[in-house]
Amino acid sequence: MKKKIGLLYGGKSAEHEVSLSTALAVTNAIDFDVYDVFPIYITQDGEWRKNAPLEGPAKTVEQLQLTSESSKPNDISSFLPSQNNKALDVIIPLLHGPNGEDGTVQGLLEVLNIPYVGNGVLASSAGMDKVVMKQLFEQAGLKQTPYVYFIRREWDQNQDFWVAKVEAELAWPVFVKPANLGSSVGISKADNREELVAAVKEALKFDRKIVIEQGVVAREIEVGVLGNDNPACSVAGEIKPLKAFYDYQAKYKDGDTAMIIPAELDEAIYANLEVDAKKAFKILDCSGLVRADFFVTENNEILINEVNTLPGFTPYSMFPLLWENTGVPYPELIKRLITLAIERHEEKQLLQVKMD
Image (cartoon, rainbow, N blue to C red; front, side):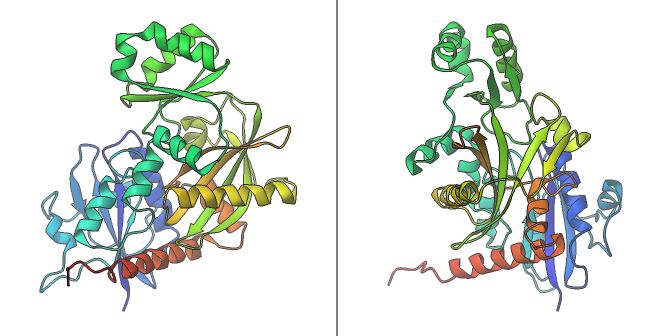
């Protein structure tokens, strides 16, 4: 009996297009001999549409969307078991950014008691908020670059104070980011006060909380983490942007970057990266998959940048390439993630919910 897999993609997020690319890539990698695949599309306006099962890999995003059934949008009953309908065995969330990667959808799937691939509510929400993530990293003793953060109201009430604080505590250049977004959306580099103000204005389009990080001259190294309670690490990869930094355009549009896999690293440096990647995975209580991003300085100092609890699976994405170079090809990677999701779900079913 084939397992019924729901691909949850799209989403009410600035990373909607990234999600479409990821969903398309997954349909080209998943084993249709083992799984029946049901696309579940969330429009950018937030409507849910469960689609008819795919007969095979989708060649275009348009083909993926054309399977839409006439069922009502936002009809959650289509996920639940009934006399004539078996519930989906596993859902693979392929939603990037807010309303998908931040624990909201994960919470819904927990309430529906449906197994799902990837991180749970806590890890997803903590991993989405860069400030909370950094504070947890501090608790774990992980080294990172200095940073300043504030919310929109604080900036609006006393812009000069925050500009002065950045100048006092950080050094140019700095990177200005929405705290709750990924895929380099809304991120700008600032080399002076004027550029800082413009960068904050841009970032506030996407989030009410802003984080400003100290720029650092270092190699950008990434490690894939896979597992639940006993995670394993992939080989390390290095990002070498051909632009000023690894922005949205370079990641998802033009591939204007070089990926070196495996990265040329001393064994001792890789061993320390592996320790720190697993430490970050555990401090956030992660499960399934994570991509841990680091800076390695000229003096071989390791600084953790962030973790991505739902790394992309597009043709330009680092995570599947890291595991492919570790000996786990894309179709096998998907199978392992589904197995990990079922394993975690079954463990949760052992928990007592009634008092003796």
